[in-house]
Each structure stands twice: as structure tokens, then as C-alpha cells.
Image 1 (cartoon, helix red, strand yellow):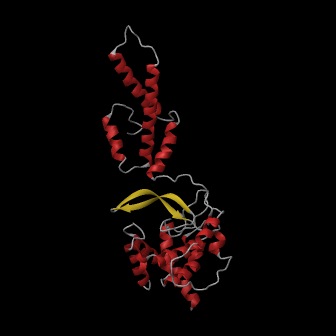
Image 2: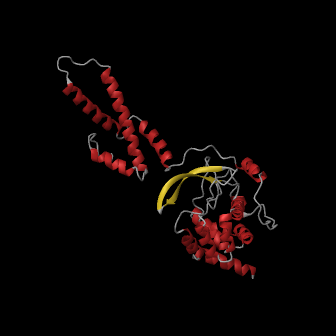
Image 3: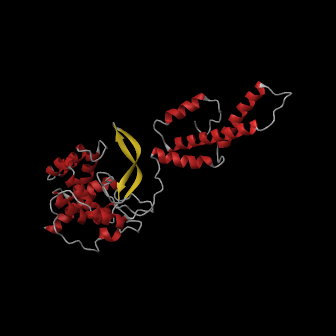
Length: 315
């Protein structure tokens, strides 16, 4: 029922609203909230009528029916526009329940939780190459939690900021650097849409790894799009949070290595396109075009130029 349909007896409007709820939108939630407020107002008016003495001379069933209809229409009218102020509160709760809006979060305590996570037993995995990490590297310096996170002015800046740390992780997994960078690009929209914690700080989660499979570290719950039977749906999901982008790459490698379902992806790592195809087949993401999108990004001018520059420097 739209805000322009003010007839309380219109059955078609209610049927439309019921149909819209099968695939809810923020507009649907707003209208449902108005209907709840209208129902509350109607109940309040009914209680007021019951507490008021009736007219014994002219009163009767016809008058009572007329007043009931009038009260229903008044309640609908009152719930439109600003209403009584109840609808916005109801709408906020409905949006959270529908997975269309992030629920308020307590600030995530990254450092304390990460210390506990790192102290926990880790599944067996190949030893990590002992490579010193410069403490003033661009990735870590720009993304310490407590700041609002890095702001990348261009796709080129994002790619340059993560390339070196992606390169180390790529060598560990045996895959081309551009494959990991392209995956991070797809997951974050060139670094513009990294998940935020409840206090507004960056989660530094470049690969949108969810907080399950025994994850004991910090997490943040947000609305996300998942594909179920080929249909995109909004859902609430918990995602891991990290102290830095370097930690995100480290946990990504740990996640891929320790999960048996990605074994075929690691076996195909020498071929970047085969690697991302196997990631999709293993269920890394529900998007049916996940591998195709990463492959297109791998061959984009931005990544091709950065890859060529890095290759020339090593030559």
C-alpha cells in the first residue's frame, strides 16, 4: 500500500503490500511500519470510544459501525506523513530484521580479540616464508584500527597500496599476485566499500571472509547480498575484522590453506584463472559470476599496468 492509497478498506492495496513483503525493500518496511502505527492508533481510538458514554437516544448498531469505519480511516490518515512518531522506530527494527540495514554495533575491540585469536591453536599448514615486513609499509600505516581507514582516491592508488602485501601472500599460495588483488578489488569495489565496524573504523577485511568456521577474533555484522537458487537476496551476516590490511591477507592465506574444500584451488594455483574458478566451485562466494568478474578485473588496464611495472622492476 503506497502512501497515496489512504482508503482503509482498499483490499487491493493490502494484497500489494503482502506481495511486496516476499522480496522486501526499504519502501516496503516503511509502509508496514505505517500500518502498524495505524493499527495502534485504531486500538487507542477504540479504547477511547469504549470509555465514552454513548448516545442512548440516537445510538445504535448503525452509528457504531459508522464510527468504527471512521476510526479506521482516521488511524490510516494519522499514520501518514510524520504520524505519531512510532512508525520510524518500527521501520528501523523492521529494516534490521529484513537485513536491509546494519544494526547498531558495539565498537569492535580489534587488538585484544586478535591477540586471543592468534594464541588459539591453528590447523596444520605449510610454514610461512620468513620475510620481514616493514612497519611503515603503506598498507599497515594507512589502516590502523582506530582511524576511519584508508581513503583511496583512485583504483590505481588502491592497487598500489595492496600490491606488495598481496605479492607475499601470492607466493605463499603459489598463485599470481593479480589474482589476489583482483579478488580484493571485486570484494571491496576498488577499496571504496570495505566493511565498517560499529564505531566507524575499517574492518580491513579485503576478502569479505565471514566469521564462522571456528573464528574467535573480532567480527562485525552487516547487510550483504547473497545468491540463493540464483536469486539475489539481502541477508545479515557476520564478517571478520582485522587490525590491518596485512592481517587480512595473512588470514586469507590461512583460510584457504586450512580449508579442505579449497584444495583443488591450491592445486590449480599456477593458473590464475583456474584458481578463481575453483574458488567459485568450492563455494567461496554465492555469486554465479564470481570467477568471471575476477578474471575481467585481472585483465583490466589498471592491473595489467601494475603487473607490467612490477615485472620490469624485477627484471
